[in-house]
Length: 219
Image (tube, rainbow, N blue to C red; front, top):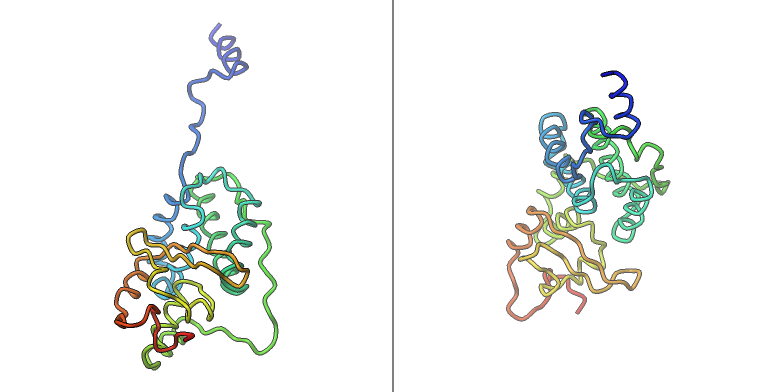
């Protein structure tokens, strides 16, 4: 009789011991992954944390189980409007590894990023600085070039947007950069990390200039 009752319950989907639906968001995974990266990734403080933050800015409120390859392709497309192939590929690699860790911990059954391909990067003599190289360069650059270079790394902004950056574009209260026009003639909103907000706050303001980098402003 007991076996028969159980079979009926299973057929009707009424078993009480069914697995709970995972309601973890990517922001929950971010916290765990940052703790793992602090211990296991030597470049965490230089650039890994930045990549993680960019991923989190895009997916923070999304449930892990709801992330699909389409969502990840959309992430690639959105980030390409702001930065280049190299940067997007580093962020994509970070997202893939975060989701791999989620699978390892039983938070996901499969990794939705597995089949998402990285972007083709430009060939030639272009070479990107390694984290330790950038740090050495930053320490040697005079102001305001050192500040501009670090804002570029932390925000992903292109040269034109950096040199045209105005104080009115910066929303410190909501930690947001509001760029009115990009190379695609479209407005852009970029969430600011605490490191970026602190850096911009440390830059002295010119009493007669609306530009952040008034030394290099277009006018």
